[in-house]
Length: 305
Image (cartoon, rainbow, N blue to C red; front, top):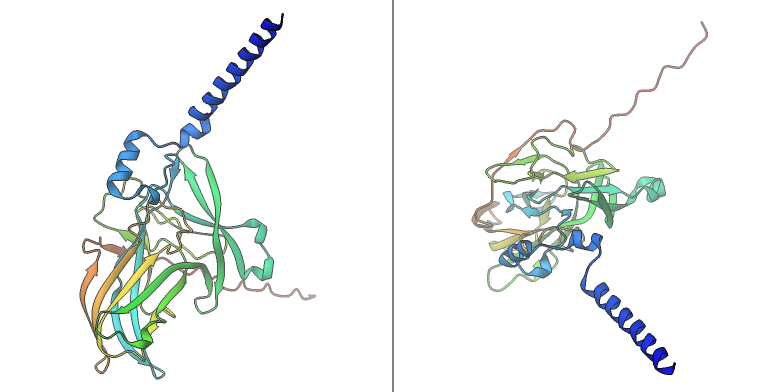
């Protein structure tokens, strides 16, 4: 009798052990759907470190690529020497970059600041949301910006490095919208028509095959170089610098331009751009791209006849 009792407990222990091994080795249905195939693993390893790739095959993630700074020029305004430039980034990923204001923060501080969710769509039609930052009201541009989305870094390539250059690492807020159509690239999931046309406080984004451009004459689209001498400089443009937004990869989030500045004559000569094979874009005019809504006319007061 004692022998039978011991044997029974051994069988129970063996069953629990096999069950535990199966739980570890075999993923659930939900986990299996998000695991990469062997082919996806090979593609990822061939292009960049695995740590830079989201290995969830069900996610349709964006891939943000900045173009080199363009339209560079120098001008003196109110006693300050300013370096102006235009910047464009585009989305060549599997899915849209879509930002939505968190409904839970509606009406807080008169909507001056809203928490922002990145909506990530899945191949099966579902989606998930992830908090990635905030929308802030930009008083000069009169629309909503996503915070710390872009950074500009100006460095000297001369010797010695000017002492006053250390502060020219600038984080910038951006409004996200489809304003520039990418040309000459085969992007499988691209859309032909712009989806995100205004800088709204509830929804912003960049569609696949589209980009967003900030032109040199936009307010604050410049760097103060008053204290810098003439010389050779490099301006680096980084999209998603803190990697708060989920993308398919991050190693292509940087572009740059090397140029000389003649402060006295207020001239700029571009010497080199990176990446060298940057695609061309067609800037599409969108009606009211900033999303500034005209005031609603008041209805005339009713009077007694």
